Image (cartoon, rainbow, N blue to C red; front, side, top):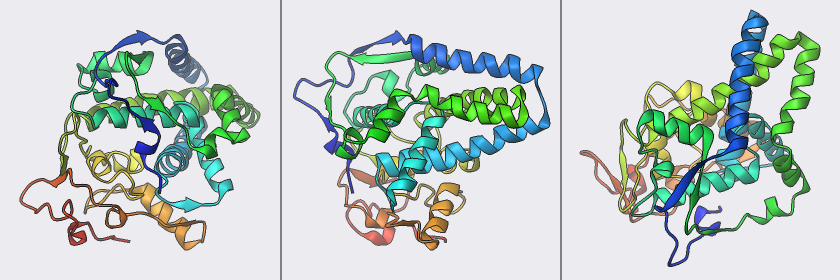
Amino acid sequence: MSTLVERVIAHPDTNASVGDVRWSPAKSLWFTAMAMGWLIGGALYFSWGAVAVFVLLSGVTLCFGHSLGMHRKLIHESYSCSDFLEKVGVWLGTLVGLGGPFTMMYTHDIRDWAQRQRTCHPFLSHQSAFLKDGWWQLHCKLYLEREPEFQFPKKLSVSRFYRFIEKTAMLQQVPLAVVLWLFGGWGYVFWGVCGRVTISILGHWLIGYFAHNCGHRDWNVDGAAVQGHNVLFCGLITFGECWHNNHHAFPGSARLGLYDGQFDPGWLVLRCLERWGLASGLAEPKDLPTRPELRRLGSASSSRAEGDESAAPTPRV
């Protein structure tokens, strides 16, 4: 099972705190164009059928694409599946509109590395004021003065498919838009592409902001500049990605909702795929190496951090 440390190569002079936040034309215009297309086109061509397409495609791309394809599989390798199924998941993840596989892996890993340092730039920690952080995350990029090296895994760097998806990430919306136009006209396009991408990008930032600023925590990563928080009542709309304190504690776990009341639809889908023989090796906290810096909060003991697997949650399904 791969680790993020293998991809981020820090040097003695590497610094996660010093850098400049600059407006990113491509990132900003992409989000703005999608938002304006949805607000204007979506209103002019409104129909309940278009709204249904928006809801259905958002669920498919966010669950099978962003959560299972990009995050739990490509980035964390927390379960195994066929090469074909993985590529389908990554393609669906690209349709979310945040970027292709190289962009998503790099952005995720650099942020994760920075948050584990003693100090971290507020862009990477979401520690700025709400509106300022929104402007930064939706329209800007951070340029660290002394950033670490990054080494992409071989399966990405040698794959023609992944390289093609990365280069054409924005254009991947076009075939989908054509299909939607043929079936439902411009309303389906404005809701199924523009609306879906807008909400996905906006929701990704909102969950990221709250997941690093407020909410319940069961675990602390000692020495880390930033701690993850669990964002309550968002399990369904995030497909389990809102249980971010759990993820900070056990990043290699395919299961994100670990305790009662933490609804994790992505995990339920993975268990179904496992039963159908389409996925295997679903990692849980008890399967991961001990982290000495991990400490259990509250009245519960820190025995899991010390290697006692009995403190890990018991699967409910």
